[in-house]
Image 1 (cartoon, helix red, strand yellow):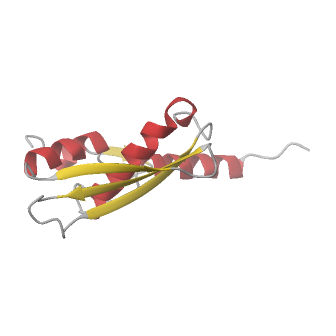
Image 2 (cartoon, one colour):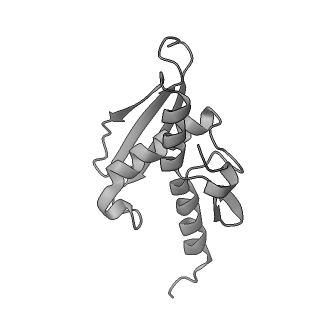
Amino acid sequence: MTKQLTEKAIDIKWKKYVLVSDRVLYFNEAYPNGSITTQRFMTEDSWVEVFKATVMPDCSKPERYFTGYSQAKRWDWFINKTSALENAETSAVGRALAMMWIWVIDSIASLDEINKALNRQKAAEMPSNP
């Protein structure tokens, strides 16, 4: 990669975070014999999307791999209203890459997880209607 990690990172609540798209680009450049695969799981709840991502740095060594899981509820918050499926898959890939320690600065948590936590925190802080 031509840019340094710190130049790619964005600030989320005073923590540095590198987007999954940047991590995937890095992985593809650094591990030309690697692979990223995803698997969608069907759930009893049709409103929930669940994905597992598997990152293999070297396909000639299939015993060495990293996994990440993610779920997204349709209509749960802004992006999931239209893209829960895609969001869950991307988050799973981000977590699998983080397990490989690719461009993790402050946290393994995905941007989606951070946003969910912030939204829950905001909802908890709002006064309830009488």
